[in-house]
Image 1 (tube, helix red, strand yellow):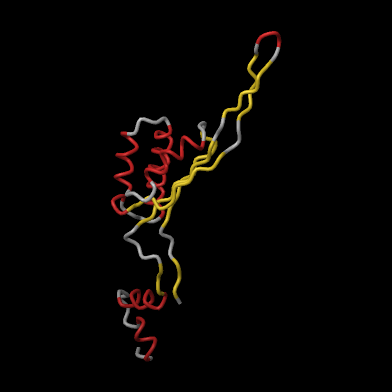
Image 2 (image 1 turned 60 degrees about the horizontal axis):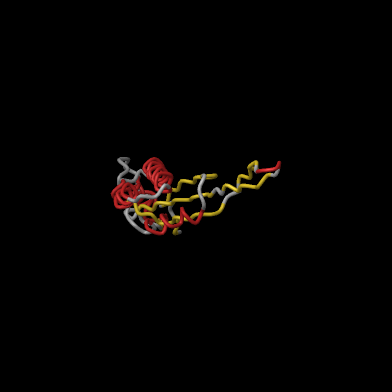
Length: 149
């Protein structure tokens, strides 16, 4: 039986105080690049969105090294998306007792990193054989098949 292994880790930033349009301008530059190249790009870009995205990329890589036991040199940015969040609504006092509404946009950013050194699919039969070959007991996998003891 062939099973699908987990090869991605992600980080999610919600209610980040900037417009989704400005964050997408930076996200489009890093999608599909390697982890190390992405960090260099984000450090040198002059936009305010870079700091929030830098923290999310760093967090996604830390999640990948913890959950997948992967090295940072094998990571690529597989998915990077920006969605609009809720708008924080305020009222600004104006002349003659009036007020004007102010909408402060927020966005949700999702960064997923993928380890390119891991196989995406795993064959269960081959996993059993490999586990039994490295098993130091005399029975092992082949002993169970042919009935040797």
